Image (cartoon, rainbow, N blue to C red; front, top):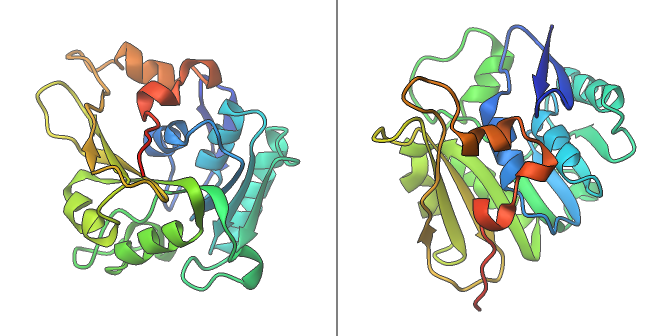
Amino acid sequence: MSEDRFLGGRVIVQQPDAGFRAGLDAVMLAAAVPEDTGEVLELGAGAGTASLCLAARLPEVKVLGLEIDADLVALATANAEANGMAGRVRFAEADVFDLPAAYRRPFNQVLCNPPFHGEGGQAAPDPAKARALQDGGRLGGWLAGGLKRTASGGSFTAILRADRLGEALAALPERGVVVFPLWPRVGLPAKRVIIQVRQGVRAPLQMLAGLVLHTADGTYTAEADAVLRGGAGAVNTRSFLPRWGGK
């Protein structure tokens, strides 16, 4: 195990040295969830990084994280306890594609960081890491499952590889979708995109300016640093991923 610190040390997460490890993507995903959260569901919670960062940013929020790996559920639960969040953040074992009846209900906000790789490519030798990284061609199922659990007026937020944007948009509604690119540096192609869908909104697809992560010398830009290290007070979702209206 390693001990990793997020949001300037406000969140401390134990996660395995081997297997999938959460990092920048989990923090950015948590930062993109709107502030009017209500009850939040995370699909594929892993060791709990995104859920815990969200709870640190929004002190009133309650989060349920679902994860198929029983060992990771136990680890995420221990991480919630270690961060003093066990009363607001809980984790349970469940298959995203076959949810128990207790979890087949609407949530005001849903978030997920689905496996990054589709069909093809070399599988990771570690089975747990392979499951976390390769979706077996089921990205559309992840997105459809998240939308299905999102209440009317609520938001579904996911972070993806940028080169899978077309595949993702094909599985999402034509309206109510916002795309927020994460640029490694000025002038370089985006490697990640955040997609957010507001249920019931009829506004056309919006491609936002996004966020540049690094300066020319490799340090974080001030805007990225505010999200990754600044914590709850630094993230304003109205400017990061603005709310929008329209029916």
